[in-house]
Length: 384
Figure 1 (cartoon, rainbow, N blue to C red):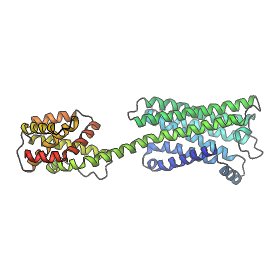
Figure 2 (cartoon, helix red, strand yellow):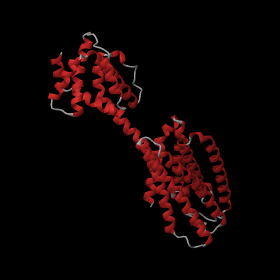
Figure 3 (tube, rainbow, N blue to C red):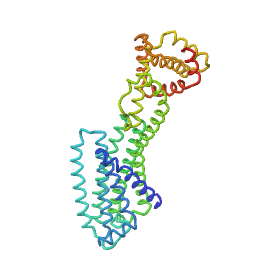
């Protein structure tokens, strides 16, 4: 169990540090960062070496337990703030006021009850040591009650919002977050039941029951870590894919825009890979629309015939045909030829615009490969 706790603690601090830059830049990310920072600090305060040091330095028995639980309230409130912000943004001001009141009242009550709880000596398990104590039981009820309310509402909001999430990464992440907060609610229920049972029947609670509650707590934190990280991993993976696609179609863009330079937009060095890919696709499409006006119909038919004789099939055959006439069109445009007409250009526009963005990227990847193939180079020279 200690090994599991150490792994969870390491992951908590890793995610906290990882999300710090985003929290500084983006206000809406601060609630989630606060949640992780609070839970990480709370878990650290639960480590035996830290517990001894804090309590000895303060001269107050089990003060670290109070600090850990207060941070737990802050963390649970921050998680709820985060999910309200994404699922019910209009209700955020009202929700924040309610959260502030709930957290303030709970933390004040916990501090008072902690002071009233007899603590003649330092104990390793504050809850176990105070089973049967009225003040100790009340302290636990306040903490687990506040935690349970926050986790239950967060679970409902995470699962409700996940049904409307478009991206698969985000949808899965929200559901894992919902599963984590559901386990958090279960943990608070288990702790409440154990303390009440111990209060009513002293001596009934044993170590295995406490171990189960701790295991549920660690599982809840782990799912929250994974669930919150999945959307970020999805964004990173999409950025890698966009960068790869951009590199693959860049040579095609360079060839076409050399013939139609006026369709190129301004500098793009600071844009994200996704935005750069969007702009590159748009500029390639615009270049194709312009160049299509420089290709007579018989050249298109000949390109289709040549592609058919090449042996390739399906999308690659279509791409090879387009690549051949595009090479011819580029040469004609650079040589100062007159346009053929607008009808073909409009037909190409409607066909291209019918595709969604991902389908267009996939099409351009095949077209770029075909454009730079020996077959396209050879047959374009023959047509010229």
